[in-house]
Image (cartoon, rainbow, N blue to C red):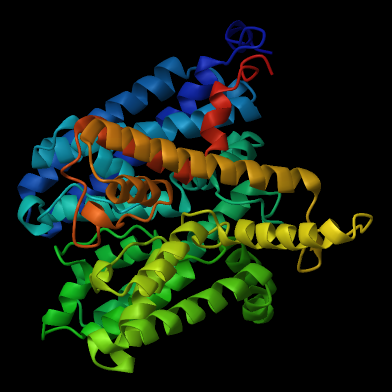
Length: 508
């Protein structure tokens, strides 16, 4: 081993600063590059002032990236990246995205620190909650694009992009990949993590480009609107350039509102599906569609979308005037909530109680594991239901040996324990977030609970004072920071972050 690497070896049981600093610095370099790209968009869109603000932000982030990667991270390329370090890197990187990703809002729109952190964290975690009551009046084109780009980068995962771009990570890339990709591990993912990351991003980019073309042609959207809303859709984020979200397009005669609704609905459903299946579909070629449709989680996911659409459509038919209109609104909102995108074409808070109850259940299921969606992930719900069924059988047949199966695969007991622990953490985090927000801001119970749930599930809109036509701007700075933490915990699925605080973490 070279002397400089040996001298920088971590103390026994400790963490190695260069090993952590260098990847975080390189990740922030990607963030700075994204800001430079956004500055270019500002120039093209005739917003030189917005471009200048993005350039200033890029310079500041680039300076931090240089210090971390080149100064504090010097020599890290000769040191192994283990699982513990990867957990720290992923967590620190996502916190840094919220802190430094908020700089453009502070520089270009005079946001306060808490507002900027909330908006940036909401963007990168694909939550889509905003503090802005009037979006068009407050943001220039560069900031509009930055909000949407943060969704798109955070959707597939900026760490996954990083693993695809930097092959020198070697085996350490596997630990970073597993620390960020949500949901139970998918067997379809290749052991060659860089190859997997690269394929996932290529599929992601291709789907985004297809949506842009469809929105611009069939939907007759201006190119900027088509690009920004495609970025937001595929990232399952929900930010929009319009105060009234996607529903506002239905009031514009120059665009095709129906086509826009149908296109975005379809791509929200796609974005909520398991991207490892798309990876497998690419590998299988002609059999690709069969690979996707025969997967148990996909079948249940599509079944829930169809059933919820029909149930809500029948429930709201009398309110909207016709069944086709009811199915149009219900299908859009079902896709928006189950994929945790959070777009809106209607104020569903005014819908009948039954319709709201169906939508509320979708907050908890979320999309498929390995998708860009948030929530519990549907595969966990499927396994939980099957586990309950098995335990019911055992209650009157105690000697029965009946494994929990999903498809042809038996679920091992450690996985069942992990899923139960995850669901417990999920419920506790929602309750804790709601309690803290209610204590600090004295809001009503519905608002506190739905704000916490919407942030943990990375959905965005909720009910009460954070409904689909409202915003989070009225919360205090402390509550916004608490909800930002809820977003990160939900995006990284708790254990990645909470493992850092386990008593044996530094000694393991």
